[in-house]
Image (cartoon, rainbow, N blue to C red; front, side):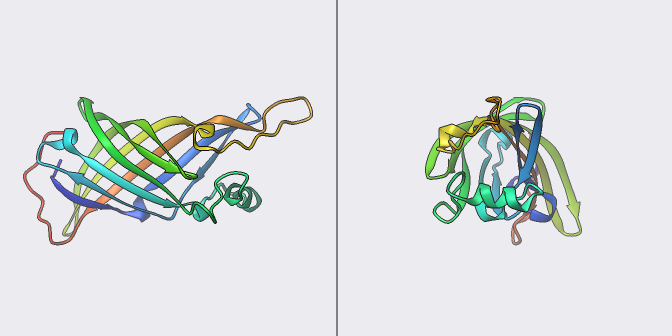
Length: 186
């Protein structure tokens, strides 16, 4: 893995989530407006750090009415809390290209530690640009961040689940002015 500082390539990355609806299906969504950086030191994954910031108002689930409701005070309250941020506090290699990434997730005015399971996908050149790729996934309980809206249908089944699966697919470009250093072990 080439050491350096990278910026997320929004055209080739995604910040997604999935949550149960009525306990019988999943609703998938994403935050298409985001920025982020990944810093890979000479020692590789063990010293890696990342920072991601997503614009809450960009939430997209494929349903405009639902997206509007999610932006409202019932859920994310985008007007009051316009960003969701994640900043790593540690990255621990777990074998091969896999790692465990722990960081502070700030959402809806609450910051809590979360751990994601990740995998370094690889590195490639595109023209003169060094690129790297990662995937990470984990689960949170939305209520831990004050997202407590809850309604049931006529037979008492929850409309929205509590457990949210978070997914990050990241392709990142080495910042201009940096030359890729020697490959470091993942």
